[in-house]
Length: 409
Image 1 (cartoon, rainbow, N blue to C red):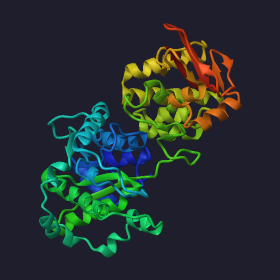
Image 2: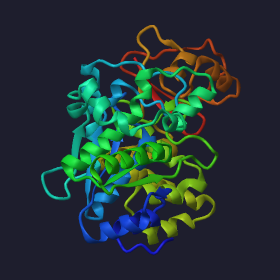
Image 3: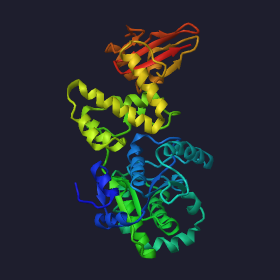
Image 4: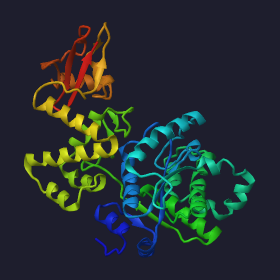
């Protein structure tokens, strides 16, 4: 732990958000004496973000809790190009209507976690399409292009790694870092932004924007990144065998969201409580110290706390109630995911894959062969088994001890 004087850096440090800071002493002094507007950018490639973005959203929440102003930058403009960071191929182009629809869906999560308004520390959401779309090509080259060298741009991980793997990078994507840097400069000029935050993979892009602001305007800007977030077993945060863990209910049922947190590795519980909940550190230390089966209490607290923040109190209550009914009472709780198999029924493998319990029919066959699949308590091993229920009735399907669903007609 460092001896920070500002509430902002002290809280970020205590809870494990800080990986790198461009000038920790300078940012600490600034945050101790005045309101610091800070931003994080999010591209609108889907109607929801997944939990891999939750640490960034929570960092904006910490910024506001410490008395500063969070700015959510939606990449309505840069989404049209695609961030090449960590990618081996170009991103699919989206229509304007699809991007606007995605932004509307993403906003719902931010509205639960941040306080929006017109006050000095109220959050605001802005769209970089509003200023990037008005830049003429020649104007952009004259104003911004002269501050970037191709030599340095080629050293950026997003470019270098793509080239090393002999994967093509379009000229369009090559411009992404320039536009992202211009975003920082624009927000500094128009909204007094002094800080950009992001994941560790964004360090080069953040520093790029800082240098652009210094060269063009003499601005003193700051950057802060979070550690690469992985689970204790080395997996990528937000990814499961069944797919992404989405923040929006339309993309992932509340019960499945709750269950993700309830099932985390024992070794991740304390870290996730610090990052993704508002619980006091003393209480987190108590929960983290629980041993044996008692650690399940901490996991339930984690699931309830995160689901309440992201989905709402009622969603957390129903999910917890469903879990209690399913595991303790052997029933089928009301909040379990459901699947309508229709009057003709569906093969068991297709049912498992449609529910997201398995990623493919091949995986479904393996689970069946292992005896891990039960329908109303009876083990099913035949991959050709037809799941059918009478109209107006339902059956409970289980994969192992943790995945359950209701089958209806």
